[in-house]
Amino acid sequence: DIQMTQSPSSLSASVGDRVTITCRASQGISNYLAWFQQKPGKAPKSLIYAASSLQSGVPSKFSGSGSGTDFTLTISSLQPEDFATYYCQQYNSYPPTFGQGTRLEI
Amino acid sequence: EVQLVESGGGLVKPGGSLRLSCAASGFTFSSSTMNWVRQAPGKGLEWVSSISSSSSYIYYADSVKGRFTISRDNAKNSLYLQMNSLRAEDTAVYYCARGTGSGWEIDYWGQGTLVTVSS
Image (cartoon, rainbow over all chains, first blue to last red; front, side):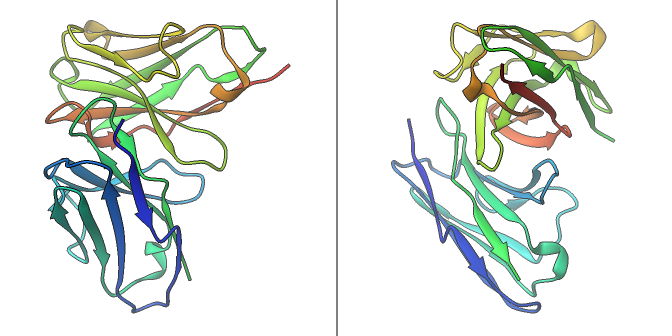
C-alpha cells in the first residue's frame, strides 16, 4: 500500500496568516492526489483534486501543487472558518489511502 | 444539488451484522462509482470499499475483505454496505462518497452514519 505522510500533524496560526501543509507519498503517484477539509462533527469536504485543481465552489485562497511524491496545500489569508483538519488522499492505485491529517488551530 | 444520505447505523454486538444504506440524489447515480469511507472516533479517514457504476468492479480494504459486501440498486439510486462478523475495531462513522475520474477520486460526501460495535 502507498503510505501518505502529512506534516506537520498540527499547526497553530493566526487569522490573516498563510500556511502550507505537506503531503508525501511513499511512491510516485503522478498527480492523483486530493485534499479534504473536515470540521469537528462534520463530513469531509472536497477541496482539491489532481493535485492542483479546485473543486467547484472552493475559494481561490486554497491552492495545491506537486507531482510524483511531494505535494503541498497552501491556504492564504486564514479566516476563522478555515481552522479545521486537512487530509490528503492518493487515488493512483489500490487501495486509495489517506494521510493522517493536519489539525490547523488558532 | 448532489445529496448523499446514509442510514442504518447503530449499536451492534461483536459478531453481529448491520446493513448501511445511502440514498443519492441530484446527479446521475447510475453513471457514478461509489465509495464507503469510515472514520473511527478521534482517528483519520480510511477507505473501505468501492463499486463501479454497473457493479462490474468492486474493491475492498483488506481490513474488511470477506466480512463486508458493497452493492447498489441503480433503479433506487441507492448504495449499500452489508457488514457481517463485526468487530470492535469496525466502530466508526461510515461515509458514503461519490467517486469521479478513476472512481477513487472523491468529490461529494454524505453526512455519515455511526456504527458502534460493543457488548
